[in-house]
Length: 165
Image (cartoon, rainbow, N blue to C red):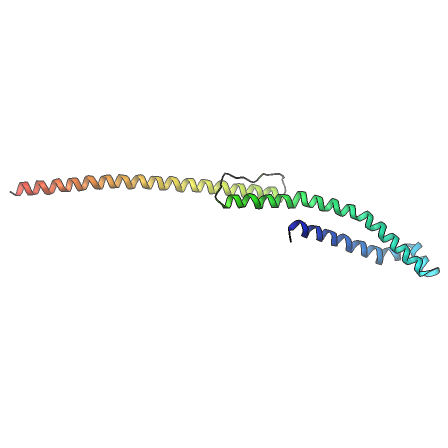
């Protein structure tokens, strides 16, 4: 299940439980009208009043649920999905990609830290590339020096062979 659906379900369950709790357990005992109906008149009228109150409460709470769900989806789930997509691209080797910093909260701090991690990886990669380039240059210089030594060794051998005759 996706994160947005999990958050929506949690929010809905929380609101639903609070509505049920307040409608069936708290309000009937606190509301003198409903309690009076149940005790003095007809229990069915009290049940109908509780049902009417439940419907009114649910109709009042549902818009709040949708507002909370949309806000959660826009301010939490979308940035996290964006992080997931961008970090997938970065993990494939595209170190030029950066995470947009859209806020100053924990998600913004996470974006800053991811960007810092990528920047440090780029610097480490560049340092390693420079080190390898320098090592290859040294290797070439050593190869040239080795060739010169071999040539000098041949000249020495020729000189020794000519001098010994």
